[in-house]
Image 1 (tube, rainbow, N blue to C red):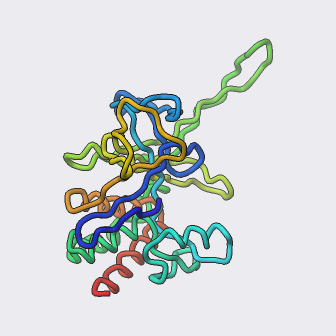
Image 2: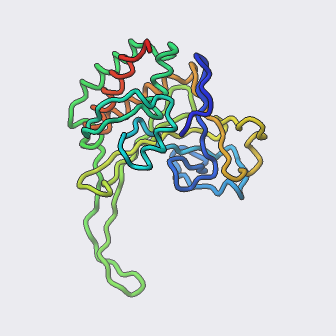
Image 3: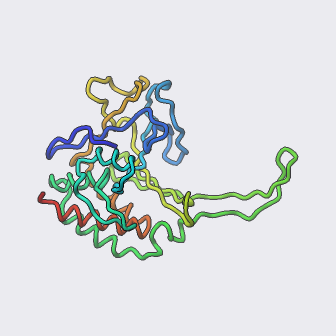
Length: 263
């Protein structure tokens, strides 16, 4: 998501799309945390207290010659600060890593906390990262014979592990679900940042969200500041525990931020 405004030393406002159905953010509805969230057609349905944002937040951006990469590079405020990714590709700071950079530069995240995070991530055993953790494996039941509409089938159930981390006093949570990789062998833990719709501030000139439906292509601001800065440090910690590549990327991000902290 692009930064709408970056007020030096005060806050970052991230524009969150409210009507997108295919991007990395979706408006969903649920009454309890353990319920499955259902997408909402926000142009037809007024915003309510039980609406929340599900954001598959990114933490870097691969630099290459593709149109998609070039377009996304225009969205970061740090296009020239780059690092070598675990996949061997050059990457730029983007979204989470971008926010970490500015919060550190402004003193809202201490260098000591990032140094501590480096040490923490390095101590996690390889088999305790999410993609190999024994308690987070995908489970399949034995096949049983069943008949549906007169047609015989072999039926099984597949369970995907989902863990939820609540950030202290905030109504902000991280959800991590492990699924099979779409284009490769193995599993892929995916992290989503979720927070109530009431955390959003309407864009300048727009009325409050609750009780009304969304305007066409409307977005609202998620504000990152000193009060919730630690959430983003903890998010990077969670990213660093997803897989070995995620850990290596997270460590590179921290080292890059620390290297440029006086820039």
